[in-house]
Length: 403
Image (cartoon, rainbow, N blue to C red):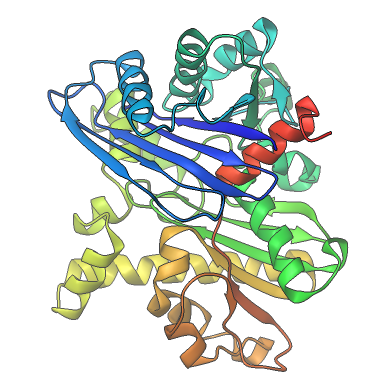
């Protein structure tokens, strides 16, 4: 058996899973939130080889930094018999958001790789520093284990030049590695492969659009297993409307705010990363709250929902033109998997293109399923993403643990 600890380290959070890759079972899970706040929360749960959740421990306490958070996770996990040592963990896999121009594949973390991740902090200042912090803390508290970095941008390294090139001065772009990199790649690759399996078709024969819709949201066009376009760009700000991020906007708006309205670059960064998207339009970044307010007649919420739907339709239509033909459209992540109303509204204009939802299949059921009418020309699916399993599998491949 191969057992991998997967760590997703955010700026104020730490999510961990121990996965047995032989049977693809979650053996333990932990989440720490509000690191650095006066009071944070921690939850640790033990599982088993059958994938059934077991005993759980929850704690409210101050976690001043990631070292304190991981130390407490290990302590609580030990009480449940779910410490990485107890469960025979052989490697640690880390989600790293930005791989830049250098990191296209999962790679074992060496001092050189660590330095490369640190250099990329300029391209992902909200993500890469936290990802690197997780690597360093885990190395200190769990010595002797190999670490593997898996990059969100890796899957989109195949984007053709026409899709990843910004139309700016070539010398400037080259000097600063300015291009469209794309994000959520681990999810898009996992879901697109699983879509082909569900359809019983070879991965390299399926043209598909994957919609990863959560607090962060992205779309991808995948032609025969190769990513040919995606909605996020140099940073995770570009593309679809998100919980707190605006997605596509006119760059002139940023120039106007700084030059003519007196906002500082830091103020604009806060606006675009924290106070835009659903939060900016309706003060409701949670999609369930947004829909409840739509139903109550809230005009701001209704407009925010319409903007989300409109942007999604634009991307689907554009990707259809890029692909030439589409075999499948797949929804994934928290909103994509759970909000049937959004799926129905987004696809309601595509009947002439062969997209026909089965209303009952769309509304009912959970988990992985086909929600289009039987015999339809374009399959529509819901496929839950599992980035942690994908990262664990990558550790197997990089380190040869499963041999």
